[in-house]
Image (tube, rainbow, N blue to C red; front, side, top):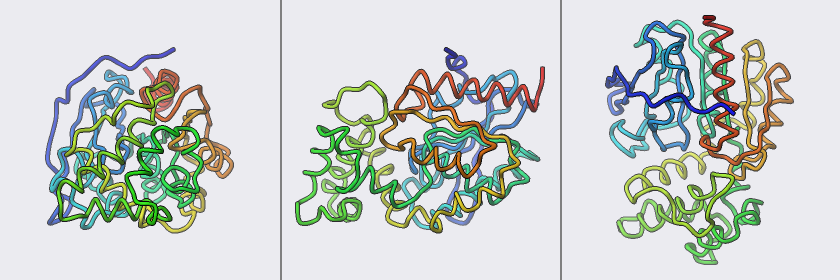
Length: 318
């Protein structure tokens, strides 16, 4: 089993203004002359973490990471104005041009896989290859699976689902995302924070293959509120995508080498979406492994590191 590369600190950071409102935190590490790769974090709204740098060989890769609009160290923090999928795709291309990179590998997991596909389909000449994990295609059926009463995830994590459901009165159960949104937008801070922590407890505690179903969520109040508001904002707008857009437009990227890594027991983004993508994109390699949703699950780490090493062998041989 492959493991993450050793811890590494960014050696180049900058602020990139992408419009009059939003400024992004961008960091680079690894070999400045190496194969460029952009890491697209999940959420939306989650931000990058130090371990995200470690999926790539620092001797062979120029690793670019950034916090998407409103997330992490980007400002204004939690801002949802001018925050759509099209805006984020624009930002990736802005960063690429700002860094003087002609083409790069695109790496994304969960929501990052959604954004990676949207970016590559919009700018197919800029993507050398894709490494995708925990596929989420932004379809309403995927949101309903995990977040609504008629979805299937509630039967897998009944303890956590009970806490998520009972936070909302029974007369609002027909649309839980919208019910949470109303609370996340409340003028009462205590109401906003309570809803965000309930959202985080449901989602954040359901990521790994092995976990304690009774443990609290992993984020503090501030991060949970940014994450929950951003996700609800995207979910209630169908992720700002046209129906089946990412499957419809696969034809634009079928020539691009790609690896799809999927946890067999991923409850947040179940294998259906990865299989649907692989059927539309038979040239892509699909690797279903014994894992949940988390990129930190050992089998996911193994598959992703193997995939990035293989891409380096292909595009930047030793």
